[in-house]
Structures are given as C-alpha cells and as structure tokens.
Length: 240
Image (cartoon, rainbow, N blue to C red; front, side):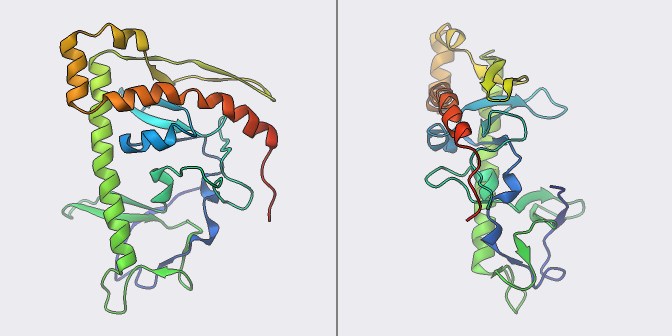
C-alpha cells in the first residue's frame, strides 16, 4: 500500500476521524516490523526477534518476524483482523499516525497516512472538537506516540551497545516452507558465545544499562520459528 504522510492540522483536518473497522489489513503483506525493548517479553511468546540494518546506515534495530516468506504476515486474516490472543506490535497500533519534524516548526508534530482506510470524514472517533482543540482521543494518541518515540531512542542505544561489544553476527536464517526453502539474508542475531566471552566489566555494563533481559529474551524468541510452520499449514483465515 502506498503511503502519503501529512502533518496533522486542526485547520486543514478539522473533520478528520479515525475508524478502526478496517483493522490491520494494511499490514497483511508486512513480514517484519520494528520493536522497542519493552515489547520483547510479549513479542517473544509469538514472534522471532532479530536485528536488521537501517536503510542506508550501518546502525541496527530490532524487528519481529511475522512470516516465513518476504511479504507474508501470518497474523492478519482476510478480514484484516490480527490473530486473537496475539500481541500486536506498537508500530502497527500507532498506525496511521507517527511523529515527525517539520522545517520551520519547533518540536515534533503528529503526522498521518492520508491514504489510510482507517481515516474518514464521516464516521469514527473525531480528532478535533468543534473548538479546534485536540479531543481526549487524540491526546491519548499523542501520548502513545511520544512514549514509542522515547522507547525507540532507548532501543537505539541498546543496539549501539551491542555493536560496540561486537555481539551481533549474521543470522542467515534458512527456513523451509511449503513453497520451498527461504533464506532471510541481512538478519543479525546476538551471538551467545561472544556474550559469554565478555569481560566482567563489559557484562556488568549491560546489566547496569538494563539490557540483559532483552538479550536473553531475543535468544529465546527464535524458538517461535518452529510454531510458524503449524500456522503456515493452516492457511489464511477465511472472510467472516
């Protein structure tokens, strides 16, 4: 789906509303999504957590794998509903909104995908009141976006530390699917042997920064790949 991000304005978008009826259909062809560290525990119960490099950068960031093949999301059905009882990553829950900087304006502002089917002029939760002020609903969205942004900064520091300690190695995940073998190149994992060889000082620095839980959770999360095969064999859920 093509995205068209615009800065949210009470003047231009006074009647804009969000309608969640379309759910997560926008994510049905997304096979991975970014994560922040506080999501690791819940995500590890459903998805493998790995690391990839940011576009045009040598910096890494953590992501959850959502399918066995590129362009496949095993957790969104034909109606756009996320699998019941399965954690929905924050990167999807904040859609179609995000934060961005705009030249000539201070701070970060809310932007949105103007092509999103979740937005409407007729029905849904209003973003602005008749007085042009943010509704309580929009205030909650803003609070969530700020929380996610700060969490992303913490995740960035985490991956920088992993790089400094040379703990990330190519994963080269080879996954056999009903359609043949699929290899996820460009995926990186935390190397357990390198972790065990750190000096006491280096290991303690990970603990002091609060990174150890995320490290071990990422390792355990790789067990979820085996569960993907059973989910894959079930096929897509039919429309209700």
